[in-house]
Image (cartoon, rainbow, N blue to C red; front, side):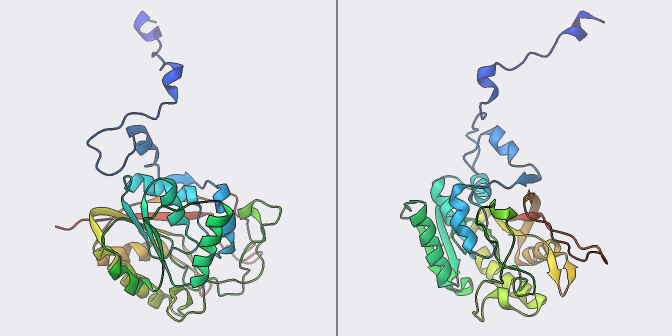
Length: 294
């Protein structure tokens, strides 16, 4: 073997191995270094819990702060404005506050703003003045918010919480997502809550109307991410991701790709056993789109 082949590739000095990389001043999208940017382009992430998530589990469909922070870090710079038209317990707003972004969250349910305030109190979070929680119907409230730099949201999952399965988790003494579900809990009793619609097509149409309004308030060449997994409608598996992509394309968004958010600690349920195969959903689809006006 030649001397050239026997030479080993020089290793990076240990003191530099964990360096996050260099920031490119041409980067107009975010404040990430090249290495940080690259890591967030993986097609799958694994969900990351935080102590700040605990109170959020009083909401029937909570989302975790660190997961949203990754998205906000990828698609905004500091002091840019993020919109969540279905903000629920306020995870997006807390994520914005933690990493220096402005945030606007909208939700129909006054009870969720109270839950958001409880989260702030129990975690001793002091909001900056550019974090706003608006109670109202996003279809109308969006028109008063001005322009934003990124949209991220996890809409209601149609009416699947109003079925015969169990609802919220009993978190006492267990890891949050491993706990059993007990009781039935859903978003609200409000007639204009899209989580209460009887027909799936009506749900998609209502969501399209709201995201269409949001599109008008998103700066050009900026991004939007919808967080949602597939689910069953009338006991049949529905390809929700495909319907969401088609809906967003109709509005004018360009589809950029899906990041699969793995949730391996969620419990398994024997759906269909022992008669038919029924899937357990242990991931969310983080579907990202871009507004590109010609």
